Length: 253
Image 1 (cartoon, rainbow, N blue to C red):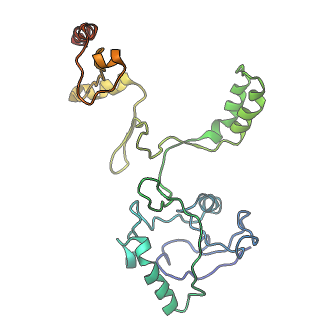
Image 2 (cartoon, helix red, strand yellow):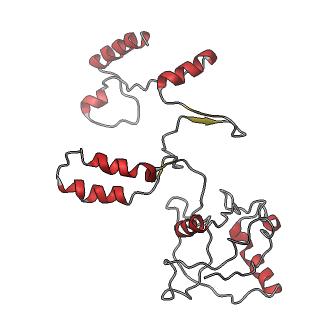
Image 3 (cartoon, rainbow, N blue to C red):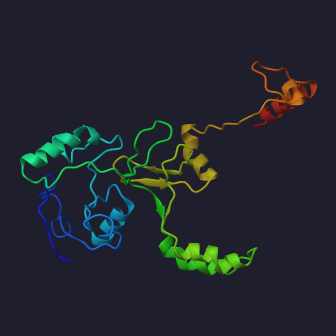
């Protein structure tokens, strides 16, 4: 299938190759049993769309930022929340005679359980371990593992290795583990710290090493009575001895 089309807006005209973009592609995940059999692809906002773009060399835009607002790539609506300009864009399509049909469609969208607001799936730059490059080694190493129960070796675990995608290690999570990688603003220098000793040696001249020790209080009367108190409960005699012992230990740190 090698058909092309003219996009309804000219924001990317002349900026990206027409050889790969604004064309019709075949994809197994689109069927005529659910809809028309024709789907607009948005590689920045969907996993299957993104995979198709990678496969075919389609340009992946950065049209909307992390706040859901249009970027400089869409200058006519830059800085505006995409939900706020839906009617404006619809009217524009109607005016330029490129609107085929307008109707409301009910479909499922993910919602944040805390704020009760719709979530937007969006591609972003991340760090990955190239699992495909080492997959054969991982499968070979699996043979040296004594699994209990033993059917895991050539069952669930082997199948998970065979189908494993590249591993994203820079997940944007509130509780995520920071990676010891520093990169200059212009991208010309990148430093990867592979041990605590190296981190210490690199920062020693700047005296920027901070050691944080988390300490739980000694035994209290609340611990003995196994109850929760709104106000502070005093340490027991044993708790006081624990505190004194800890102070002596911390002096050596």
